[in-house]
Length: 92
Image 1 (cartoon, rainbow, N blue to C red):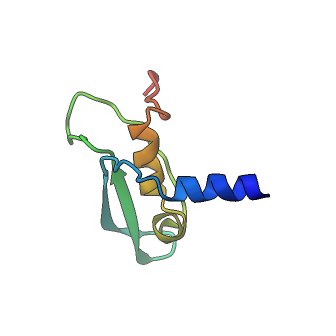
Image 2: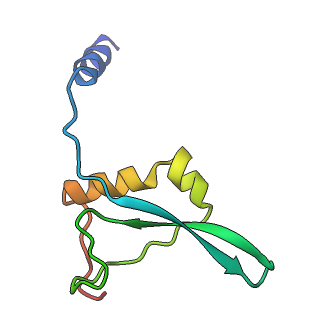
């Protein structure tokens, strides 16, 4: 238990390198099934250019506010991209 506490204390003091942040933009779309407007959020990774030659994969996450606030999906995606832990598929 003491060893675990020492490791935890040592890692808590280590500064994390900031990663490039993507952009999270809100949009409102009309939901014809429920006959009402709905807010959606679109995340684009760092360096994204609309209309560019690079194809990007699509991730659909329902309950957007939960993924935006409770489980910060944009920050998770930024970190995965910065550490090269996420790769684009050649099948896009």
